[in-house]
Amino acid sequence: MGDRLYRFIRRCGAPFRFRVFGLYHLKVQPAIFVGNHSGSTGPLQAIFTLPVRLHPWVIRDMTDFRLAPAYLLGDFIRPTWHLKGRLGMIVSTIVARVAVWLINAIGSVPVAKEYGLFDGSLRRSLELLQAGRSLLIFPEDAQGPLNPRTGLYPFLTGFAWLCYLHDRANGHPVPVYPFAVHAGRRALALGAPRTLDRQGDRRESVRRLCREIEGDIATLYRALEKGILPPEPRLGEPSFGLRFTQEKERSRAQHKGSHKQRIGHAIVPCYVIEEARERPPSHHTR
Image 1: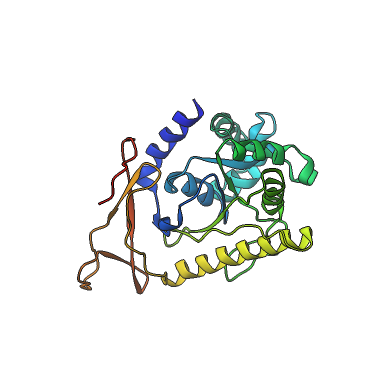
Image 2: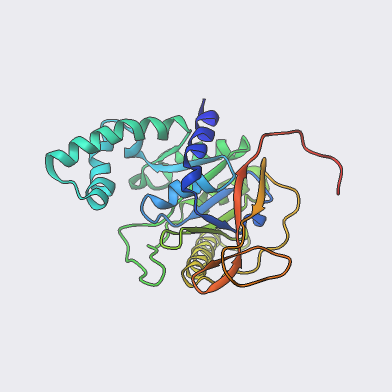
Protein backbone atom coordinates (compact mmCIF):
# COMPACT_ATOMS: atom_id res chain seq x y z
CA MET A 1 0.00 0.00 0.00
CA GLY A 2 2.81 2.41 0.88
CA ASP A 3 4.31 2.47 -2.61
CA ARG A 4 0.92 2.84 -4.31
CA LEU A 5 -0.03 5.67 -1.96
CA TYR A 6 3.31 7.37 -2.63
CA ARG A 7 2.71 7.23 -6.38
CA PHE A 8 -0.80 8.56 -5.88
CA ILE A 9 0.52 11.50 -3.83
CA ARG A 10 3.05 12.28 -6.58
CA ARG A 11 0.34 12.27 -9.21
CA CYS A 12 -1.86 14.55 -7.12
CA GLY A 13 1.10 16.89 -6.63
CA ALA A 14 2.10 16.95 -10.30
CA PRO A 15 0.35 20.28 -11.06
CA PHE A 16 2.25 21.90 -8.19
CA ARG A 17 5.74 20.64 -9.03
CA PHE A 18 8.56 23.13 -9.17
CA ARG A 19 10.99 23.25 -12.06
CA VAL A 20 13.87 20.90 -11.40
CA PHE A 21 17.55 21.06 -12.34
CA GLY A 22 20.33 18.52 -12.03
CA LEU A 23 18.37 15.30 -12.51
CA TYR A 24 21.24 14.00 -14.63
CA HIS A 25 23.08 13.45 -11.32
CA LEU A 26 20.67 10.62 -10.44
CA LYS A 27 22.61 7.45 -11.14
CA VAL A 28 22.81 5.34 -7.99
CA GLN A 29 20.25 3.98 -5.57
CA PRO A 30 19.70 3.48 -2.71
CA ALA A 31 20.81 6.90 -1.57
CA ILE A 32 20.20 9.61 0.99
CA PHE A 33 18.67 12.87 -0.23
CA VAL A 34 19.42 15.87 1.97
CA GLY A 35 17.83 19.28 1.47
CA ASN A 36 16.72 22.55 3.01
CA HIS A 37 13.39 22.43 4.79
CA SER A 38 11.96 25.80 3.70
CA GLY A 39 8.87 25.29 5.84
CA SER A 40 6.56 22.70 4.33
CA THR A 41 7.84 23.47 0.82
CA GLY A 42 10.99 21.35 1.01
CA PRO A 43 9.37 18.04 1.99
CA LEU A 44 6.42 18.43 -0.36
CA GLN A 45 8.49 19.42 -3.38
CA ALA A 46 11.03 16.66 -2.77
CA ILE A 47 8.22 14.11 -2.90
CA PHE A 48 6.39 15.77 -5.81
CA THR A 49 9.46 16.53 -7.91
CA LEU A 50 12.25 14.00 -7.35
CA PRO A 51 11.62 10.83 -9.41
CA VAL A 52 12.67 8.55 -6.57
CA ARG A 53 10.68 6.58 -3.98
CA LEU A 54 11.70 8.28 -0.74
CA HIS A 55 11.22 7.46 2.93
CA PRO A 56 11.31 10.77 4.87
CA TRP A 57 12.73 11.33 8.30
CA VAL A 58 9.88 12.91 10.27
CA ILE A 59 9.71 14.42 13.75
CA ARG A 60 8.27 11.71 15.99
CA ASP A 61 5.39 13.94 17.14
CA MET A 62 4.03 13.97 13.59
CA THR A 63 3.64 10.18 13.63
CA ASP A 64 1.52 10.18 16.81
CA PHE A 65 -2.16 11.20 16.72
CA ARG A 66 -1.94 12.43 20.31
CA LEU A 67 1.13 14.65 19.86
CA ALA A 68 0.68 15.88 16.30
CA PRO A 69 -2.00 18.60 16.84
CA ALA A 70 0.11 20.63 19.28
CA TYR A 71 3.25 20.28 17.13
CA LEU A 72 1.37 21.14 13.94
CA LEU A 73 -0.20 24.21 15.56
CA GLY A 74 3.19 25.69 16.42
CA ASP A 75 5.03 24.59 13.31
CA PHE A 76 2.47 25.21 10.58
CA ILE A 77 -1.07 26.30 11.49
CA ARG A 78 -0.14 29.38 13.52
CA PRO A 79 2.78 30.74 11.41
CA THR A 80 1.27 29.87 8.01
CA TRP A 81 -2.48 30.18 8.41
CA HIS A 82 -2.29 32.64 11.33
CA LEU A 83 -4.84 30.70 13.37
CA LYS A 84 -4.51 30.81 17.14
CA GLY A 85 -6.26 29.66 20.28
CA ARG A 86 -9.18 27.27 20.19
CA LEU A 87 -9.86 27.69 16.47
CA GLY A 88 -6.22 27.02 15.64
CA MET A 89 -6.20 23.83 17.73
CA ILE A 90 -9.43 22.59 16.14
CA VAL A 91 -8.02 23.10 12.65
CA SER A 92 -4.71 21.58 13.70
CA THR A 93 -6.46 18.50 15.05
CA ILE A 94 -8.37 18.00 11.82
CA VAL A 95 -5.26 18.43 9.67
CA ALA A 96 -3.25 16.17 11.99
CA ARG A 97 -5.67 13.28 11.55
CA VAL A 98 -4.97 13.23 7.82
CA ALA A 99 -1.27 14.15 8.02
CA VAL A 100 -0.34 11.51 10.59
CA TRP A 101 -2.07 8.78 8.62
CA LEU A 102 -0.32 9.79 5.40
CA ILE A 103 3.08 10.15 7.05
CA ASN A 104 2.88 6.69 8.57
CA ALA A 105 1.34 5.08 5.50
CA ILE A 106 4.21 6.08 3.16
CA GLY A 107 6.77 4.49 5.46
CA SER A 108 8.33 7.54 7.11
CA VAL A 109 11.01 7.14 9.75
CA PRO A 110 10.08 8.80 13.08
CA VAL A 111 12.97 10.70 14.66
CA ALA A 112 13.17 11.97 18.25
CA LYS A 113 15.98 14.52 18.27
CA GLU A 114 16.17 14.61 22.05
CA TYR A 115 17.51 11.04 22.01
CA GLY A 116 20.22 11.78 19.46
CA LEU A 117 21.47 8.64 17.76
CA PHE A 118 19.72 6.27 20.12
CA ASP A 119 16.05 6.61 19.24
CA GLY A 120 15.89 3.69 16.80
CA SER A 121 15.69 5.87 13.70
CA LEU A 122 19.18 4.94 12.54
CA ARG A 123 18.47 1.23 12.88
CA ARG A 124 15.29 1.57 10.85
CA SER A 125 17.10 3.74 8.29
CA LEU A 126 19.84 1.15 7.87
CA GLU A 127 17.21 -1.52 7.28
CA LEU A 128 15.62 0.59 4.55
CA LEU A 129 18.95 1.29 2.84
CA GLN A 130 19.90 -2.37 2.94
CA ALA A 131 16.53 -3.18 1.36
CA GLY A 132 17.36 -0.84 -1.53
CA ARG A 133 15.23 2.08 -0.33
CA SER A 134 16.22 5.75 -0.39
CA LEU A 135 15.83 8.26 2.44
CA LEU A 136 14.80 11.92 2.56
CA ILE A 137 16.38 13.96 5.37
CA PHE A 138 16.19 17.63 6.38
CA PRO A 139 18.97 18.09 8.96
CA GLU A 140 18.51 21.78 9.80
CA ASP A 141 18.41 22.68 13.50
CA ALA A 142 15.72 25.35 13.85
CA GLN A 143 17.04 26.25 17.29
CA GLY A 144 20.31 27.51 15.80
CA PRO A 145 20.99 30.88 14.14
CA LEU A 146 19.50 31.47 10.70
CA ASN A 147 21.90 32.26 7.87
CA PRO A 148 20.40 35.38 6.23
CA ARG A 149 22.13 34.70 2.89
CA THR A 150 20.80 31.18 2.37
CA GLY A 151 17.89 30.92 4.77
CA LEU A 152 19.52 27.80 6.24
CA TYR A 153 19.80 26.81 9.87
CA PRO A 154 22.91 24.92 11.05
CA PHE A 155 22.93 21.25 10.06
CA LEU A 156 22.80 18.37 12.52
CA THR A 157 25.07 15.41 11.80
CA GLY A 158 22.59 12.53 12.10
CA PHE A 159 22.55 11.77 8.36
CA ALA A 160 26.36 11.71 8.27
CA TRP A 161 26.48 9.26 11.18
CA LEU A 162 24.02 7.12 9.26
CA CYS A 163 26.49 7.12 6.35
CA TYR A 164 29.24 6.01 8.71
CA LEU A 165 27.16 3.16 10.14
CA HIS A 166 26.11 2.04 6.67
CA ASP A 167 29.71 2.02 5.45
CA ARG A 168 30.86 0.06 8.50
CA ALA A 169 28.04 -2.48 8.23
CA ASN A 170 28.11 -3.01 4.46
CA GLY A 171 31.68 -2.22 3.45
CA HIS A 172 30.73 0.40 0.86
CA PRO A 173 29.54 4.01 1.07
CA VAL A 174 26.02 5.26 0.45
CA PRO A 175 25.72 8.31 -1.83
CA VAL A 176 24.29 11.52 -0.40
CA TYR A 177 22.51 13.83 -2.86
CA PRO A 178 22.21 17.49 -1.81
CA PHE A 179 19.31 19.52 -3.11
CA ALA A 180 17.96 23.03 -2.57
CA VAL A 181 14.39 24.24 -2.85
CA HIS A 182 13.63 27.89 -3.56
CA ALA A 183 9.97 28.77 -3.02
CA GLY A 184 10.28 32.21 -4.61
CA ARG A 185 11.79 30.82 -7.81
CA ARG A 186 9.55 27.75 -7.68
CA ALA A 187 12.56 25.60 -8.45
CA LEU A 188 14.51 22.65 -7.06
CA ALA A 189 18.19 22.08 -7.84
CA LEU A 190 19.87 18.71 -7.29
CA GLY A 191 23.63 18.51 -6.80
CA ALA A 192 26.24 15.83 -7.41
CA PRO A 193 26.36 13.08 -4.77
CA ARG A 194 29.01 12.84 -2.10
CA THR A 195 30.13 9.91 0.04
CA LEU A 196 31.70 9.65 3.46
CA ASP A 197 35.50 9.47 3.54
CA ARG A 198 36.29 7.20 6.49
CA GLN A 199 39.99 7.98 6.52
CA GLY A 200 41.13 9.50 9.78
CA ASP A 201 39.05 10.20 12.85
CA ARG A 202 35.44 9.10 12.45
CA ARG A 203 34.00 12.17 14.16
CA GLU A 204 35.95 14.47 11.89
CA SER A 205 34.86 12.42 8.85
CA VAL A 206 31.22 12.81 9.90
CA ARG A 207 31.56 16.54 10.54
CA ARG A 208 33.38 17.03 7.22
CA LEU A 209 30.63 15.31 5.21
CA CYS A 210 28.01 17.38 7.04
CA ARG A 211 29.87 20.61 6.22
CA GLU A 212 30.30 19.61 2.58
CA ILE A 213 26.61 18.80 2.09
CA GLU A 214 25.57 21.98 3.89
CA GLY A 215 27.90 23.98 1.65
CA ASP A 216 26.56 22.28 -1.48
CA ILE A 217 22.96 23.09 -0.53
CA ALA A 218 23.86 26.71 0.23
CA THR A 219 25.58 26.99 -3.16
CA LEU A 220 22.60 25.49 -4.97
CA TYR A 221 20.22 27.82 -3.13
CA ARG A 222 22.26 30.89 -4.07
CA ALA A 223 22.36 29.70 -7.70
CA LEU A 224 18.58 29.48 -7.71
CA GLU A 225 18.36 32.86 -6.02
CA LYS A 226 20.53 34.49 -8.68
CA GLY A 227 19.18 32.46 -11.58
CA ILE A 228 22.63 31.09 -12.36
CA LEU A 229 22.92 27.34 -12.84
CA PRO A 230 25.43 25.22 -14.77
CA PRO A 231 24.35 24.03 -18.24
CA GLU A 232 22.41 20.79 -18.30
CA PRO A 233 24.12 18.08 -20.35
CA ARG A 234 22.19 16.24 -23.02
CA LEU A 235 20.03 13.64 -21.33
CA GLY A 236 20.29 10.04 -22.45
CA GLU A 237 17.85 7.24 -21.74
CA PRO A 238 15.27 8.06 -19.05
CA SER A 239 16.00 6.85 -15.54
CA PHE A 240 13.73 5.60 -12.75
CA GLY A 241 10.73 5.04 -15.03
CA LEU A 242 10.51 8.67 -16.10
CA ARG A 243 11.14 10.51 -19.32
CA PHE A 244 12.29 14.05 -19.50
CA THR A 245 11.07 16.45 -22.13
CA GLN A 246 12.37 19.93 -22.69
CA GLU A 247 9.94 22.69 -21.96
CA LYS A 248 8.99 24.95 -24.86
CA GLU A 249 10.89 28.14 -24.98
CA ARG A 250 9.05 31.01 -23.35
CA SER A 251 11.69 33.70 -23.51
CA ARG A 252 12.29 35.82 -26.60
CA ALA A 253 15.96 34.87 -26.73
CA GLN A 254 16.74 32.51 -29.59
CA HIS A 255 19.13 29.64 -28.85
CA LYS A 256 19.61 27.36 -31.80
CA GLY A 257 19.25 23.64 -31.12
CA SER A 258 17.91 23.89 -27.55
CA HIS A 259 14.90 24.95 -25.54
CA LYS A 260 15.57 27.07 -22.51
CA GLN A 261 13.67 28.69 -19.68
CA ARG A 262 14.35 32.11 -18.23
CA ILE A 263 14.84 32.21 -14.48
CA GLY A 264 15.41 35.68 -13.14
CA HIS A 265 17.88 37.32 -15.53
CA ALA A 266 19.72 34.14 -16.53
CA ILE A 267 18.93 31.70 -19.30
CA VAL A 268 19.33 28.11 -18.17
CA PRO A 269 18.03 24.82 -19.59
CA CYS A 270 14.88 23.54 -17.93
CA TYR A 271 13.24 20.13 -17.98
CA VAL A 272 9.78 19.04 -16.99
CA ILE A 273 9.05 15.62 -15.53
CA GLU A 274 6.40 13.53 -17.19
CA GLU A 275 5.14 10.33 -15.68
CA ALA A 276 5.80 7.32 -17.90
CA ARG A 277 4.41 3.86 -17.74
CA GLU A 278 6.78 1.27 -16.37
CA ARG A 279 8.28 -0.94 -19.01
CA PRO A 280 11.03 -3.59 -19.17
CA PRO A 281 14.51 -2.10 -19.48
CA SER A 282 15.89 -1.92 -23.00
CA HIS A 283 19.12 -3.81 -23.66
CA HIS A 284 19.96 -2.13 -26.94
CA THR A 285 21.62 1.19 -27.50
CA ARG A 286 20.68 3.82 -29.96
